[in-house]
Length: 337
Ligand code: AMP
Ligand code: MG
Image: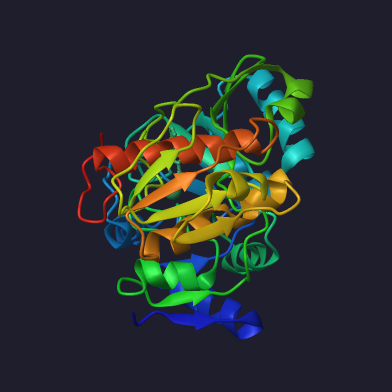
């Protein structure tokens, strides 16, 4: 694990220098850590795919220095579309909302995996913002984990995932939201949520008719088996569960209640003692990672209420559970389900 974890002003300077040379850097965002490279440099983009072991069919999110940069990477298809984006950007940028829009022809095709649409957002993280404004170019940045694996929410997590394949990680402390941005596709005044995240259906409703498909959506790169631990994961449901006598079980509890009902566990992670969904989201991937690394055969996860950011947590839990049963999330496997 050779990647260097860097901090503060010096860290920003080193990150910008490496990005200028076409390198890739682990950077903090308010959602999860990203692996960033210059969006207009195809070699840097190729390095991102290589470091993550990500298939070239899985498109990347482009981070803009400011909303005013949007027409460098997007070509609006109508005035109405531009107007809708303006309203959404004023409401939610900088912040954890990603918009899917028609791609500008000059943006390398590798970024969008050859698709006609590009995913864009403006992050609210002050360190990422500083890197963007000094670099004066958009950055492509998917989450800084090996393909299909648990997203990193701290600099140490990035080092565990990609320490052997990247040089620098800028430390911005733990991520505020802890789950990936909400991805929204715009069709007229319809807003379709392709990936639930910190910006909720309730918040988007004010700006258009929201379509939230529910269940597991299969947008490019958003595989049913994403975010999977190496261990098997099962979401606790109302069915009676029985396991072989010596099964070592790790519990991911939402709040304290379930511990009393279910008795003995090899290890327990509590997402929020007070049952606060935002706190639970911020702790989610770290808890999953610790359970995955602990000495258990199986992870049981308590479901959380599907409201607010709880929708995003349940989306990730279902994918983690699907991936662990179908083998798509295992580190040695890159084949999508
Ligand atoms: P990540 O940055 O790792 O959270 O992953 C980015 C995700 O955004 C991808 O896996 C897709 O689900 C989605 N995405 C990015 N670009 C596009 C695009 N051009 N079309 C559809 N979905 C996209
Ligand atoms: Mg990801």
